[in-house]
Amino acid sequence: MERTKVIDRGGMSLRFSMLQQKEVIEAGNGRFIGFVIDAEVSKETGYVTAFLIAEPRKYLGFFKGEESVRKVYMKDVLVVGKDVILVKALS
Image 1 (cartoon, rainbow, N blue to C red):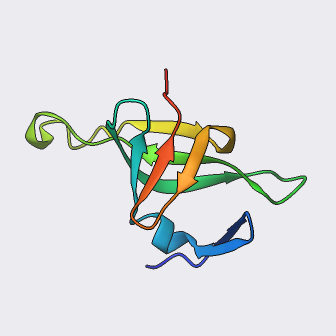
Image 2: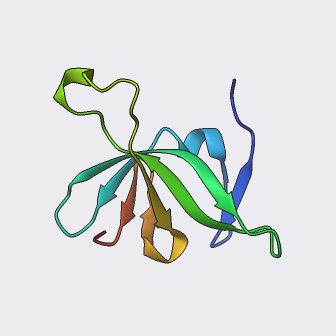
């Protein structure tokens, strides 16, 4: 099922389903963080406040039942590019 949410940022419109196809990369060291699986939206403003990122599975999928999810706030997003989303160094 394709999601059809639209995100506006800096005058750019982007379907959420297209955003989910981009790799999330940590800008400082080039580390692959994962892919966007969901977004957190402010009830008051209707703006996206954070992305939920599914981290890559480790050990050839031995822990298939456990999916690690990380929250990346919009203030930490540096660039939404053609193929990747660059974020600040995450702790």
